[in-house]
Structures are given as structure tokens and as C-alpha cells.
Length: 312
Length: 312
Image (tube, rainbow over all chains, first blue to last red; front, side):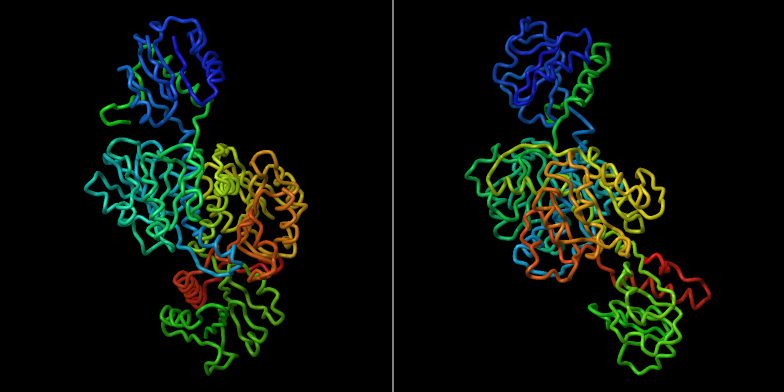
């Protein structure tokens, strides 16, 4: 039996589609009449505190989100394996966001918009993509997809990750010891890391000060498409105001929705979107998770299982 | 002998570099002491009215610009073949501009910026790149380079050109008869056409009304990186204000610099840059034109010669 426990999304629609995809396999929702001891799979998104009460026979927890940082903090999380959502459609949408914001800043959008507002015709030629370095933090599924989109645009690319990922056309930097070198050659810093105790708050003033300053007119830029927990927003405000950063594109925030009194809203060179960089599509999710359940019931091992010690 | 006649660029710097590249071949500038009848090549950019006076023995005119629309209108243009500048560096920079503005609009920049100004947290998921169609007008060197950059991003691509160019991954529409069909499936219209009598004013209200309206939130978008003569600015103002267009990115204008009293400056969803999409680099230009002169002196035919009847 599969139990759905999805908050903030259309759970009824997911249930209908999963029932269709799984044929005879029983799919239930909270409030339905079922014995919790018979639940073998739980499909969760933002599970409530009592979500796992009475669930004693789980084979797997299926996470709608690609990031499982919040799920791993659930105080009553069962020991069953957690399967992350890995989805080419979600990767494509995330890369759409990354490419749009990287190229916008590479083309000095903030400067030209200010000129337009002042009716100022002031020619300045942005560097060619090949003269600019994009540094990507995180070389998982999303980071690798971003590489695949940014490389044909001609950017110089470097990556920073916990373990070495050899990717053609990308200069790889690995681990804490290489972080400063990675930053020193980066003009546009893209964050696609998982949120773990090691990466929390990594987008802070100390990091910003180490970015390359002499290449991109206006200063280095950050693009955060991962988690609000990665960023110190007081540092971002200070860095945008004192010129340590030329601009910031933020899709995620320490508190979401971003509070009305956040100073970020009013900063000209801060580009805010309301956590919409990418969404897990129902069509992809139903295909992905129904296949995992069918395969696992047929005896195959689970795929894309979270390493709890690592945190992702 | 090579005569330089370059306005609005650093002619002295070009002369120095061309002298180095061409070794013993004589390179002169206006004001130097030389016999105009001995000039065999002229390297021009925005030539003055008297530029060609007394020049009677030309083998070729070398144009610094990729577009030769203005040059072809010169009242005293000699009959010698005109060689256009074709340059991968210039193509890269032009594509940088095109990709930045296409992706910005695809990600609904105008909407999210308005939300930010109003401190509004309003989630809306932009379509995936694969759900959006970019229609490129002009499939010359620049159009083909734009295709090479946009295809790996996942966009659905279509092209419109005077003659058929078979390009993998692009649906080709050819000639006036196919123009309406081309527009009817286009969400983001990119202009990279040469400016000719046939293409002048092509970005007008009639064209805008034929673009696809139901896909991109806010309405279809135009990106003009070619020539101001392609656009009817009174129509663009009207179309941005009445919602026929969702946004416009314009790097070129009917009159440049854009006049102080143009209404375009103040339109929120009009994104103005001061003709800086791409620049011909001295390094590339010197390598390109010095090679052409050396090859031609050695008996090779000229390359990238303008078809005057066609206009490009």
C-alpha cells in the first residue's frame, strides 16, 4: 500500500494519477480508511509532525523534493530508505533559471537598466562568454545539467564539490582546501549544493570577498537556486550595498515567503523570484515513482537512495 | 596599398596592427601623403561622402561591419567587390546578447520584477525551455550561431529566411508566403536579418499581432539585435502599451543614439541597450582582413563578398 502525505501541492491529483499508473496497487491518502501497519511506501512532501505515526512496515520513503534537508530533520522519520526525486524535467527547469540569471548578469543588466532609467546612451561592451568564469557549487544531477547548458554558450566553467566529478570542459575543485582557489577565479557564483551542516550559510561575506573582482564590471555576482539555508541574508544585503557583490539573483530565502520587512526587496541589484526556479512536474513524478514501486515490488533494488550520513 | 577610412573607432590602432600583420604591404590613412590612384584595398567603417574621391584602382572594399546596409547607400560607392567581416568572436558576442534576452523573457523577468517592487510573493512557474518556441529571423552566420547556443538549452526553434537553410533541430520557414505560419508558432521573436528594402520595417504592428499569444505569460516578445531600420518604433511603443507584446529587448534604433525624447526609454517592459550587443574585435579583424589581402594578392578569390542585388 502507498500512502500519500503531500502538503502545499494538489495531493488529490497526484493520488488519481498514481492510482492510474499503479493499476491494482492500493494508493491511499490521509483520512482514508486503512491500517497504517499495511503501508509499505510513503510518498511525502513537507510531512507533518504526526505523519509517520503507526507506520511500522515501510519499505521506502519517496520524497517529492530533490532536496531532502527538511525531511531529514523530521523528528519521527522512520529508518526506511529515502528515495529522492531525480527528474530531467526538473533539471531542465532549474538550468533554465540558472542560464537566464547567469547570462543576464554577464551582459551587465543592472548597469544598462540604470542607464535606461537615466536616458543615458553609454556604450560599454560586456566581455564575451569565453572571457567570463562561472563557478558552480555542487556537481550533482542539477550541477551537471547546468554544465551541459552553459558549456555550449562558451563560458569558462569551474566546479566545486565534496568529491571529484570529472566533467569534460570543467575545471574541478574538491573539498574545503580548494574552496578559496575556486572562488578566486570565479566571476559568477552559482549555488546548486545540497543543504547540509557543512554547506549551511556558505554564501556569506567571507565567501563573497574571495570572488574575482577585476573581470565583470560592477563586481562578482551570486545566483542561489538551492536553499535559503545556504545564504546569510544580512551579509548579502551588506555585500550588495558596499559593492562586494555586483548583483545577486535569489530564488530561495532563509524564511519563505520572504518576510515583508526584508531589506532584500528594495535593493536594486538584488533579483528576487519566489522559489519558482523549478517545480517537480506531476507527469514526471508519477512516471518516476510508480516505476520505482513496480521495480522494487518485482525485487529490484531502490535507486537514488539518500545517504543519511552525508545528508543528501 | 591599403587605405583605412574608419569613423567612430580607433583608426590609428587598427593601422598600427594592420601594418604589423601585413609586413611590407603599404598601409595608409587619410591625411597621409599617397597617390589615391595607387589604393588597391579600402578598409571602411561609416565612410564620409568624399571617402572614395580619386580612388580609381580598387580591387576590394573591406567592411568592418557585418551589416553593409549603410555602406550600400553611399552615393559614390565604387563598383569593386565588398568583403563583409565574418568573425566567430563577433558571432559569439551577438549570441551572448540573444541568449541573455531570450532566457530573461522566457523566465518572465518583467513579471517577477514587478512583484518584487510590490513586495509580492506570487508563485508562477515559467514554462520549460522545451515548451517555448524561439523564432529566429535570418539564418546567416549570426542566426546559425544563435541556433547553436539556443538548441542545447532545450528551446523549440524555428527559423525564417529568404532561402532554405537546412539546420538540424530547427523548423525552417522560407520566404514571404511562409511568414505568417512562422509567426503563428513563435513566442519569442529574434531578429538577425540583414537590412534590405525587403526587411526594412518588418518589426511592425502587423507582424506583432501574428505572434503566438497563449503560451508565454504576459504575451509574445521581440528581441532586435540587427538594425534599427528593421523596426517601427511607434508600433513597438503601441504594442508594448496595449499588450500586443509582453516585452521588447532592443539593442538598435531608428536613430542612434536613441533621442532623449523617445518614449521607449520610459516603458517598463522595453529593455534598451545602446547598440552594444556585439563589437568587431581588432584582433579578429586584423587577422581576418590581413589574410584576405595576402590571399588575394597571391591570386586567391575573395571570400564573403556582398551580393549587391540581394543587399547583403
